[in-house]
Length: 301
Length: 272
Image 1 (cartoon, each protein chain N blue to C red):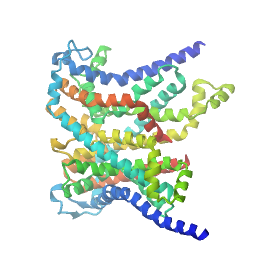
Image 2: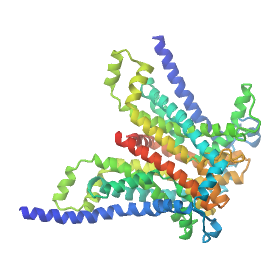
Image 3: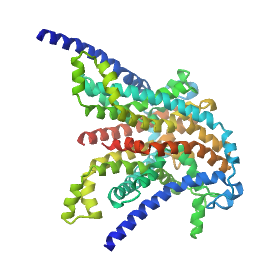
Image 4: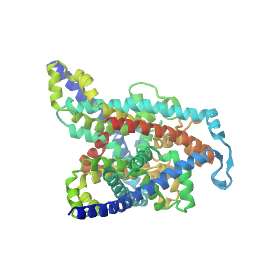
């Protein structure tokens, strides 16, 4: 009996290894070919100068592309814009999303599902469609934003809502918030619904109700969900592309570039492949750092 | 009591205002579609006096039908591959103690963190060298790869909580891990498969950057890239542009409204 058992075990163990390998290999192959090899290619390519048309004509430049980046004012503008978008997104999307979630969780009795559905809706629309819809709203000739601002007696910006980079970056934020706040709301709402009713009852006995209870009791309890929400928003802010591509193409004179659009410009419009790779490596480092933060926070959770 | 009422009014007021902010652009899109050119210019805030469909006819000339078909093909195959491949890999990671498992999981998390923009040039070069530019296959493959890491994480969490007794019984009956996976695990994983499929469908249907660099011929463009053509073709004919967007957006909204419970559930699970 014992002997038999061992046989089954050792037989199934080797079988397990075969099965496991069969199941695991496709994922590894896909990720290796299309993510990890290109990532290494980006790092290697960042030390060369080459263009799309002269693929075989690589010139070693060492850290030249990185030195170029530090001296490139538009790279710094792009990086600065990414950080503005990170901070504004956290305030607008996670902040407002939390308020909305709190209201839907305990603030109102009727219409919860309807409000949740409406506010979540933009999430399923492609960012290009979202950008094009907002383009007509911001349009200086036919846009309703101009019409509304004029109707309350204010003056509209002379270069239009998207022509002045100091204004257009905020128009990009408003559009991004329009699309993503509902997602944050739903994410945080799921966290809030995990807080048990007893906690609120106990808080009420201690005299904490409404906003006070939310601030001192609920928020600390959903700390982990909030961290995830902030990380998802931050990662999303570094991936921003469509809104800027459609609204301003990074202009006027590169004032609204972000890393994504600037990499695209360098690679596919200016054909500076090596330089685009160096910029990609910088994005890669930021992305991996954020991924590491996420891993750390999810382990704690 | 009155303080309670004021708080209530503020709460309803806030969600109502936010809902108006969300609905207003969609309303503008649909109304502009039916307006005449004159109405679009003179009455941005007005409603159309008649429901003309000439804008729709113009919008359809850019080939929206073919863009949608391409998006459908890409989404179908990529989502199928992502869900299958990720489910298999996540099961191994959650069940079998390989020494390399921890390393593989770290790779998966790293893969999740890397955005397409960070590997754009080598990826483009590779697809170009394989002669796969302007082919749906050439987009499906990298999109599948970029969808896998997140989906593995999603499945991994699900499989960890999966009761192990059934599998143990099957092992005693002599089933291999491969058989257990396909005969026992898959049939019982409906909810997580649905979540993963919904999430990835939304992502791939809307993916822009990779499709933008790889699909330059109209025959192969997916919907997000194709929509840009509306603006190229009908520069300031807002009626035509909005009609095109309406055609592209309304079916997605209808699907969303039907399945909204599952959409919300699939995305809400991310925080856990």
